[in-house]
Image (cartoon, rainbow, N blue to C red; front, side, top):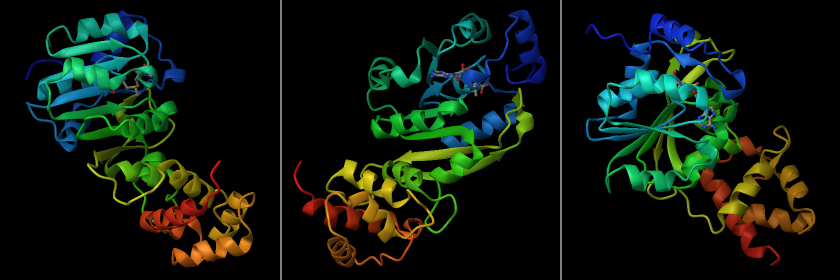
Length: 294
Ligand code: SAM
């Protein structure tokens, strides 16, 4: 194909010069310059000609262009006003792209979905995320239980590993459970620094999150469940018993906490990182029933 994609070093440099564009580190601006990586991301996301795509941070349009080619429609949120005229030029050939100048953390994504996509359309979030707000963005999108099928995102490798981690590993923690309560998480690609301009200081991976229709465990009170999990990892090297005693000291005597552990069939001498989500949910439900009201 003779067309020169945006995601090439030469075209990217050309645009940087033409618009005297200076990258803003504070906005996590590391643009992709490799079409193969982009096509791989889109393939992993499961995008088809019928799909709707939501992108966060189109930058100069590298991924947006590939989404426009492979999907039915693309809606992209960009916070940096300086990129709007550039996107107008780079995406001029595509009539299935809508750019929204808005901070994704403040956007009403559900309303945008309702306005821009067909009812019941298969929608996927696909993005090379600004790394400084990876976790707030993903937690907002998964917690809001948006009508999307999956989220496939380039993020720091370390965060991707934590989100997809299983018990008894170094990466497993409260973030793993928070993400996996709402989604099925897997790392689908590790990406070298050379595919970005400028190159980031950290390694990157593509994480795929498939939204669950139902939570994988039954939890009586979701807020308390997550509080308990946070507390269980508060001091990773300490036992679960120790972390729980500290977390619940104002509410229960130590003996009562031992009874909770027994009733949930969990050995208090274990560390938080060995507990499965099922075990955390049993423990949370046992304790929540006995919590003093107010
Ligand atoms: N998608 C482009 C690419 O792959 O070449 C750019 C990705 S770059 C890692 C992240 C993009 O997110 C930048 O364009 C940045 O301006 C934008 N961004 C940063 N914070 C944002 C926010 N809160 N809401 C929307 N976009 C944001």
